[in-house]
Image (cartoon, rainbow, N blue to C red; front, top):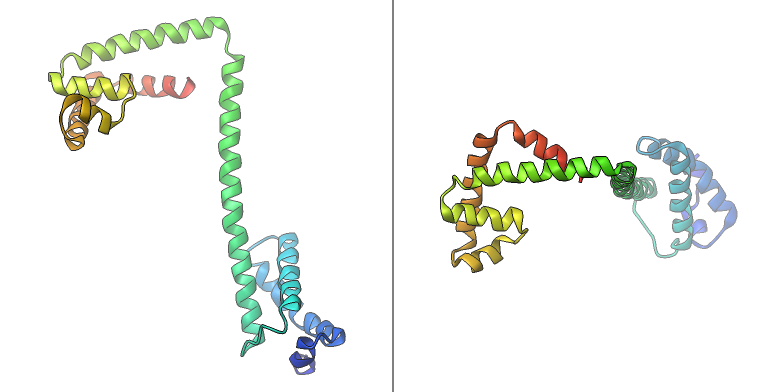
Length: 194
């Protein structure tokens, strides 16, 4: 069937030649596209390849038209997959955010009061543990976790390097992990609810 295709006629805009060109390559391109995407997306992508080729037929002059079309379609499929991954990730994050908002909206006042009491108790327990740390280490931890200050700003406040701040915070976390043990799971769960 490829012998019937006259690429020169296609380049000159001959619709009959293009029809033969289309009929020859459409099944092959569909077979390739269906390896990457579902049939409806494959049809759309193959159609785009043919449309784009028709629009650029005078400029495009590959040595091997089949290899050229296959590569073009393969790139289109991969771009579609990458785009779909971004869309899926975004939709997943939106669903998670909506679920959290719905959960918080459904929370009763009693639950809010309970959470506040638990948060206050946990903060007092953590503060008791933080008080056991060396003073500079405790100060760096409090600034980072209780006041949400960046390492760079903490370094300026304390007059030490950001690397030293990181060391203090690492030391504090290691100590607190050991000192508080089982509370970390509870803290993690509460932080994700709020």
